[in-house]
Image 1: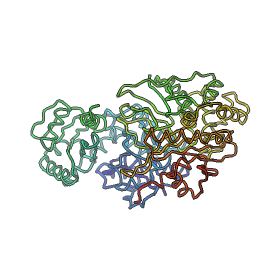
Image 2: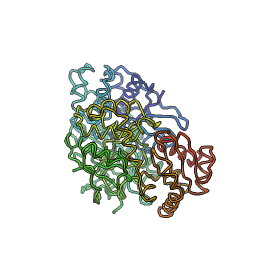
Image 3: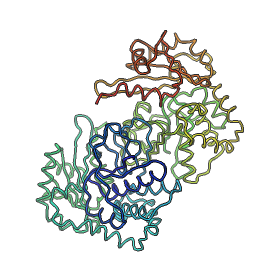
Image 4: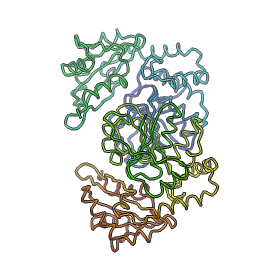
Length: 314
Length: 314
């Protein structure tokens, strides 16, 4: 059974795409099993329950040389710790390519679309593999989640068409109402500890090269209730400080994204991050908070800007 | 116009796939232009003339940040010198993935098949883009060339099906006779200088990691007339010695592959290469020549064995 998994701190796309791709592979001659690399956020259990699908198990320790398939990520620092020892045979992803090596010729399918599930739907249609009701529900949910129901600038025509194609198969009549319910589930953070809120959608990136390389941790909390999250700023800054120390990072940011109003208030840990944000985005940080306006996509609007800032001058 | 190009020391697949993919992209909304990274071998002009297609121009110097599409390769050391400064937006390939990074999300399409053109035909069929006669001729020729008319162990069912699909469109009734004519053209080496013979299908590889990393140059001459090539052993060894010195390599090998009898006589530059080959393949080198039997695929039978030999022990 080929293990299939998404990134650490899994979001709905990472989990749903692992489930759908494992099912697709199993039905096309490659027995596969979906796994997750960590605890779920509050949106994903809602989606899995609505789709009638079990939560996939945590990935067990894999011995060196085990063939694996990745979805929704490819950079080793966002994956299982011993990825370099494993045999990556397949990747389906919608992120930039970053330093992955494979031993043999892999199946790779990357496209600049809003969601991995949009690419998975293409695979079904190209190979005339039927789309099952639960799979349609999972893919549709992943696309709504990753694109914030088409509000994110990462949204493409292919993502919209995929949702239109999937909704009747999934039996979802009112897509907007379903998306709102998903986002409400995600925003119901209750008394979740600040450390967990920070880690829920958190990725580590390396910017620049060689001795000047910087490692940054970038967290995002997408919510319909930003006031609640921002009200816990002091706790969250303490959790960010701890993460920076624990992981030996150069910088840590936490963006609080208001899904409905498409705006981003980012918590700024120290003068280091403040200087970078002010120079990169031309904004003013006050009281450890940066108003990044409508920059709601980490992938498209935050990471490339930091990448360019830290790139070695040619 | 998006530049599209294959690897250095281009073979028929590198040139044909650049032409076909540039045409495909142009017809699907992304204006593109095919280029080559060096002089053609003796097979490719035969193919281009038979297809009625002009030789693509040499790639001009591209300024930093220029978007480019790669076919039939992805490792920076097999590409244009300043690849690291360019913006790789698309790759269609059938080689292992090796250390490529992209700034944004790329289109990637890798499959473990015998030829890049086999993947390109899939793209046409998936997106219902018509296959033109010249394009069919180019793709069919590339597949016959890369798979040595299905003799190479890299051959897959998809390659055979592609040739079956393409032959009537290309107007080629006798595929075997056409393949023989291609191989005869390739084998007509005339008075080509030994340096040029070595470089004709030559790739550089890095094996192992860090301080122990080794850089090797691996040349292949696929021919229906191995006697002619092996008769020039002394000249070829001198050219290999010069290449090793010029490029500061740890080892250089030149495999003379008998296309029709599916066998490989490899020229061995020095005691360094001899020790490695004897340990890796359990064979005896005599008079600077190693009989590697039916190991006729550099990609599938030579490179992975050397890779494993030089891999750091875990």
